[in-house]
Image (tube, rainbow, N blue to C red; front, side):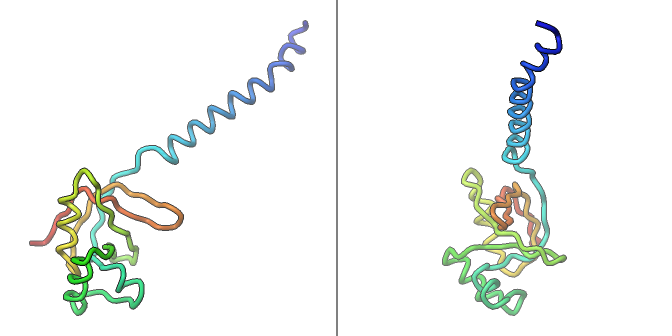
Length: 130
């Protein structure tokens, strides 16, 4: 065996190893730990916001009732981004706090998730104005 034949014979194995290593690195970064971020904005009830565009102080009473009923909560930032707010099962108190602040400005800290076009914050902490 010449060195060239040996190299040529091992190229498919090397390519397979590099492919597996590359896919492994991609899966760790794409599906690994979600990044934690803090976002300020208005607490929305997503049902009224998505169906009617309802938000703000004039919608506060309705939003409070909707969130009390268990309808989904969201956060609207000053630049128009909307995040679905999701309960962290290990830190339910933080989510329960945020839903008591319908139409209020809060800061939510949590893990960022984006699945099939839906961006969300898994609520870990909430800072309110009160």
